[in-house]
Image (cartoon, rainbow, N blue to C red):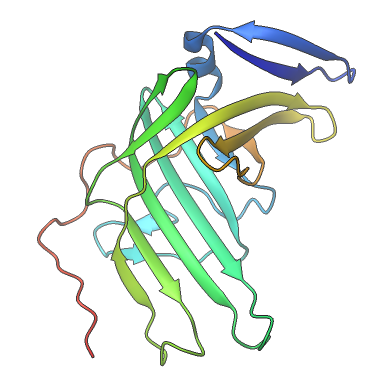
Length: 193
């Protein structure tokens, strides 16, 4: 059994015990961070062209549907020494999920995820594009946010305790690419010197 708090619009906190099956139902859908510019699905990653599309603003999006998940993330990291040299990272991956010991376990499709890293002052104009997979075990906090008038999802890395950006429910019917292996396993990514 999982314990988490739900914020009712009247701003009363009520602690509820929710069975695992109810948590799996409540997490279904597409969730986006506040920028609302990053969303899972074909507008973020085109597997046929091997293209990660850079959104206008950074953010994160997860989708969950019938035991499958997908992640789209755009991270921008400032450079304190040179403000003209921010680093950026685009990450896309997907796979299966399950609940184990009250935690959400994300198991990625091993060769399907992609990562694009840009460091404009050090990479000579050539970003690094490579395969990416990173499984996660997460604690889940879902509650109604009275200020935004929407369901809020906070995922916490079980090993580090680090919280991801809060996300809000965008679509109950998740926006996702197909769930099986959708990228070429034969294509090789070699950084030329």
